[in-house]
Image 1 (cartoon, one colour):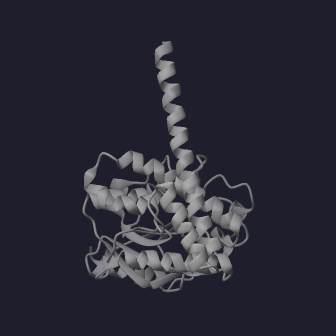
Image 2 (cartoon, helix red, strand yellow):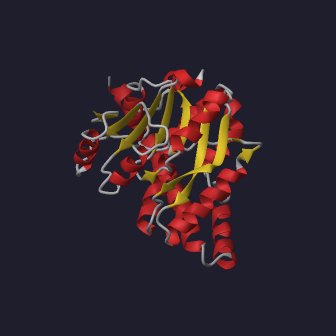
Length: 308
């Protein structure tokens, strides 16, 4: 893939990005290597998101506005992905600010080192109790999955990939969240390695309150459980299932193990305990919700089948 022929597409899904989304857009249009197209997918926003996008589009002709009415990050990413014309697709999130050399550095290994996919890391853009512990948990987890410049995980807030590979795989449109985790598992099925460059960092607006942490983790737990169900029969992915079960830390899925671990957290790390217990418990409640919903759905399906 000769570098002088590559076109770069950036795809950013956004749902109610608020005024802070302007910071994301401002960082994306001020790149040392400008993107050939900057595709913003408005995922049914009800705030001023469209007005913010159009104000930038009036000044930067490489910005393309797309609207996606079906709510969910998987569907929104697909809308942008399959409209992209670039040879390389880069993605970040609407609550991120990227450095000015982000495109240049993130795409270089794909263009010049024959990598298929490259992922970077993040810094904390909030800097309060909740966000600092989130940053520490992310750092510990991601670096535990990294080895020899590659990583067994994917976070779509800071990555670039060959367009043909991503268009072949796509995102699961049924996933409101954890669509990147689902994509990671399908990349592993195809034995595609993910280059990890932790020095390329985007500034991310981490969860900034107990409520946001609990809501986020509940959602992740719910959709991770859906992913486990989808891939349970593929035993080639067994080694990666612990990541899906609980990606940051904590004990196994049994309640007694979790209870003993919780007591240990309070005793040994009292300052961090409010964060770690909320993170872990909300995840488990989300996973339980998914199981109950699936169970009820199966009962209804069988009842409908008997009634025919």
